[in-house]
Image (cartoon, rainbow, N blue to C red; front, side, top):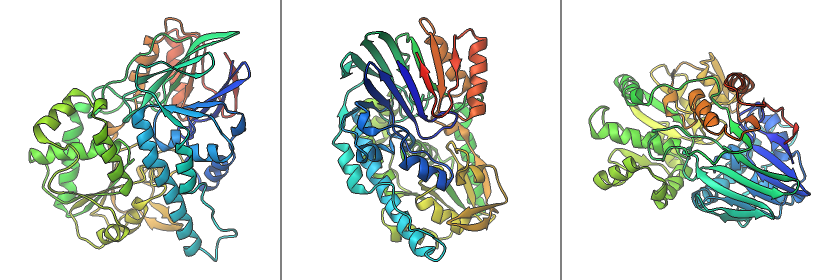
Length: 463
């Protein structure tokens, strides 16, 4: 068997790993690469393998950097089944169609706004019709239920605790000469996070593909997260500023809203208007309500006592574009939560364009920001940032809170791999910037984990 690392190798986006054995091919994830516009466009349009020769796909979870290029895969000839959990399929139904609509809207806006500067018109990677067609390939499987995805290949999903429906993929392969267990972590969550259960540990694998997003970093303790958020909100509210929160519509928005609900209920923060300005977040929140089986016991207890964890008096969900635009003319204090999480598309761009030059405002970063994204440049507090091609002075206060991260940190990853080590013969570190992956590899090797590798993009590895 060999593995082609077709994405998320020494970077955190564009997860794609192609397994080849005995004449068949199985794809793990098919995510969008997010980074510099031209590079992203080229990599997302030109898959590094022939989709027509991929026999099946297994999807770890619904985040766009893991699932967002499935419509391109199908559009270019993939005819197999895509296996995932029920919650992941429901989320993809919402998220892939939304991704298509955003691409269409952004292309129309840029083509109209910069008509004179564009040599060629911008064409969406895929349209909504492509996303809908791709959904017909999905097949859902619950946690802990082994299912055959290809002859001689059984897949079992374990709870990854990362986002709703996220899964650790356990593949039991019995196709001569390959007889082994391969585990793909997808994205691992953190213990004791709100809403979801803790990540599970798979049966001991022979080969492990594990993420390394925070391979050399530790998160702030969960215990101090609400205290820090209280201070941040009160500081901006006192100066009547707007708090702009770029947020991933899946999981991060729901966790953040849930935290604000708890703080509001106990009077820790003032009752200021809170706007979730994302039609996608609204639809995803409805999907959350359909899957309480994924929630942890603490969240279920909160629901029994307080009702809807994602709805309270001063929280407003903004659906229409006109209502979104109206927020720009309103005075603070207020909190605006909008997608996208890395500030690469969506309504957050319009809010940033209207607010970053005002010192009383705040940009609150609560999610990972990949290299070369606008969100990363804001998190680095660069003096000026380009939004829609126009440079703006970054005068607003910037606060980065990593306690909301849904990714396992260094110690979580070390523990996960260590608990998988009994039969482990090879470990591949993926989905991490190079310095994070290499640092984690060094620590794992020091713990006696055998044959730890950090693959290059496009590399084939034999196992």
